[in-house]
Image (cartoon, rainbow, N blue to C red):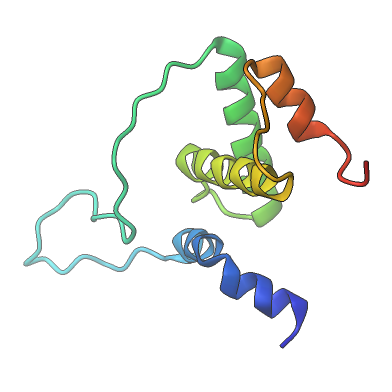
Length: 116
């Protein structure tokens, strides 16, 4: 099994994001209700309070990924979910958070070069 294949198996959530952006809307038969179809991957609403800068970052990253993937189906929820999983992955790679008690220390720990 190649490294790419093993990574895909270990990252099923990434495969779900891929499927989500590849889905094409099917024509709705006239017997069905008109409206927005259900999401194929149910999500729970979580309200966040973002600063103007954070909103700008989220919109910018969403736009960059949409452009790169060639799909306007990429959304902010996917970018936020991806960022959460990336942060979790980095924390696990670094062996946890240690004795960090503030965000400046967290930033330094997460951005340290892993070769140190």
